[in-house]
Length: 139
Image 1 (tube, rainbow, N blue to C red):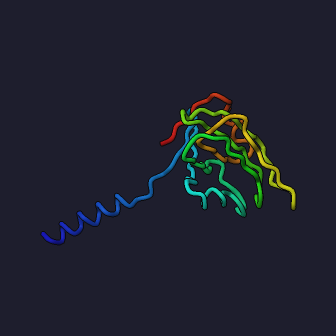
Image 2: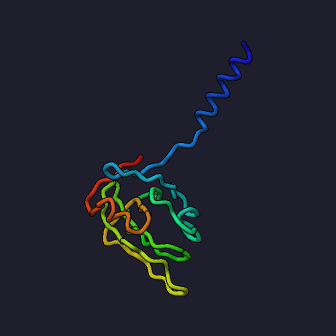
Image 3: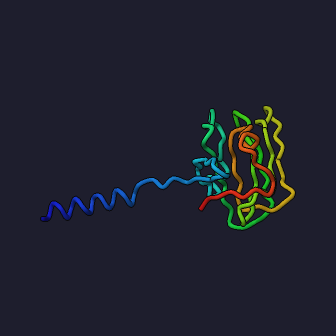
């Protein structure tokens, strides 16, 4: 009897510790995303990574809506950058954003406030037909 109890508790612990997948979806296309919800995570982002799988992305989460600028310092590949407001609507996009040249790096400043910023591979926004005003789904 004691063994069954321990086994049930162990199964419960394993289930509760299982990795919860974070997804951002548009229509029928979903991306598994890494959540960047701290200053340390947001600063590092995709820097120094060699690539990003087509169905993966990075979701930057900020405490409030504002105009958040991004740059491509220490990036190795181009990406699409998508700014999303509190209502989960796309408010700004910068497609095919190339890595910074050696010592020169420019910031991309959106013209609208956003609470989230999604980074995906270059060309993905066009491939899935993403446009300003489209709604994304995520929790």
